[in-house]
Amino acid sequence: MIEHSELSKFLSFDAPALFHLEAEKDKIVIRYSGKKYLTDIPTLDDIVAGNDEGLTSNLNDALSSCEKIPFMAIDSEGSTEKIKGMYRYVLRLYGRLINGQKALVTLIGIQVFFDILVPDGETPDKCEEKVNKILSSIVKSYKIEHIKAFPFHGYHTEKKTYLRIYTNSTGSRKTAIKAVQDNNFETASDDLYSFHRKVVRENGIQLSGWSIINKYIYKQGKGTSPLYKYEFDVSIKDFCLLEDITTISDRFPISALLRDRTLVLT
Image (cartoon, rainbow, N blue to C red; front, side):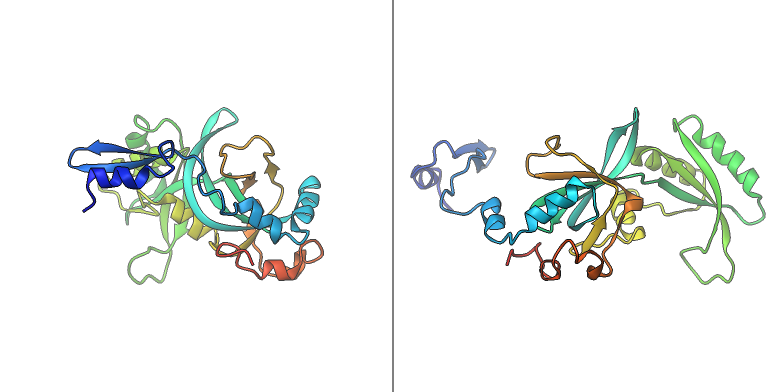
């Protein structure tokens, strides 16, 4: 194990402002200041510029006229944003554009919900009345819809009736799920901790594959993260898989779409 003095010597070469040691209980932690120190290593912008082949110009032309553009998501997370005075659930997708630059796409218009199975021998209206008594005092805003669906478990020849409960946030959804489960109702679509994965799965959002964004708001110069040069707000209805790359080949070359830009720019 490297001793404190050895670490100090190791870090003293040119980096007092870059790294410093801190003692935490029984261990030594190296803190990094965030300053750039790999001066001879090309940045992402350098790599993009060297492999651009006119793609940034094509992209900027498409953005100026709000045309459809390709986007490759590589990661996702759920969040809450204030939209038109109300807090709404959004899905953030992190990835790359056709020119290799990082982009953040925020999907809006996502409905947050879970389902309650209407017990056998009970009418949907009667079940809804019971659920309202449970939720009205603990969830500020919600909506109930009657749906038909096959249960996830077991074999069933007919669909069963469910109450679909819509809430404004995942926090309210979690509160509502726990409350109805405590009252012995059977629930579905009720994952408490990975709602963003449910949204990705049910909306066919592909990671590490090209998608198309349309009717977007390009937040040029108004980004929420310094790590992303391009940021967009898009309705989830206007985000879809790019199933046929020839549909945008008049704007973007097929050779660029065939590269896997999440791995290496080539």
